[in-house]
Length: 293
Image (cartoon, rainbow, N blue to C red; front, top):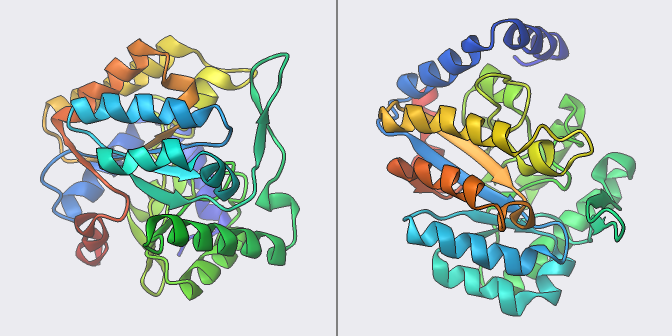
């Protein structure tokens, strides 16, 4: 059973012995019988600048036989549907990311900043935001979304918050949440059950620094960003394992506008095309839960 002590202990362990994280990922993949390195790639589209960037990125991925899931707040999806709808023709899928805009871009710095987060509001507010996002995606695509991701990845991440989130998603019939951090993936596996008929797909961390998400915010956009070269290096570490055909489930996300004009980052991502590229709600991914028992 996961508790705060387990989480703290694992964070400490992976900080001291980062190689233990890679061993955990591989051991779990072997346990569930994963035969091929598998990539789950998603994009959080938090500002208006991401619509055009999403098309550029998905076209690039499509050329390399890769696809992705896109998490777009309902207000932005509705306002930019002419652009976003084209993603469907390129094999992409949409993830419910709530309804309200939750970020804007600072005109002086060009960097996004938060305007709304589930962490700071009452449960009725974030539940309504999920419901409205669900309703809009159903109307726009003709299908009820099966996957949810919280705005501002990792902010709404205490065990108590996640438990409340999962209970509510279960009432709406969701099959997948991808809303939590690498340490929980190391503790519970790349896919694990969190409520009846609902699984969590945690994001992956760096092989050299497991607590650090591989994302564009931490490496490219944050005030203390680690830098482009380090991001490319971390992607290369996973690409080496993919190239060696090491069975591994890799769940990554980026902001499209952060990488659309970064050809070196896109090239690093394309090297993962030697493995399989699946969607977050792919049947084979969901079936891994049963094999883990």
